[in-house]
Length: 123
Image (tube, rainbow, N blue to C red; front, side, top):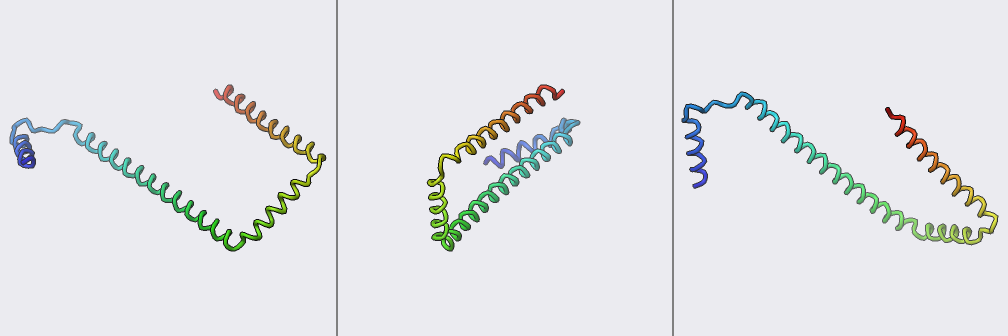
């Protein structure tokens, strides 16, 4: 019944003498078509990104399982020996740690100063 009403409305619009299209009909139609194409391309890009992320996560998980299966015991022994050596560090290592912390802070301060300088002199 709705289809018949649409057909009657269409027939009535075509049968009237004022059935001329607006002057910018082609422009508006092409703009809508281009907008539709852009939204489809954007949706396709998003789907591609999601699939790439999913495949990367799956490959990373499989790699972790394989490494754990083949080298699990060796890795546990290696990390336990590394942990033991860190526990045996003496007091002489602390100045180097403090030096590293100061160096990182100075690098961050330099980055902050450079970014603020470039923001002020951007013009």
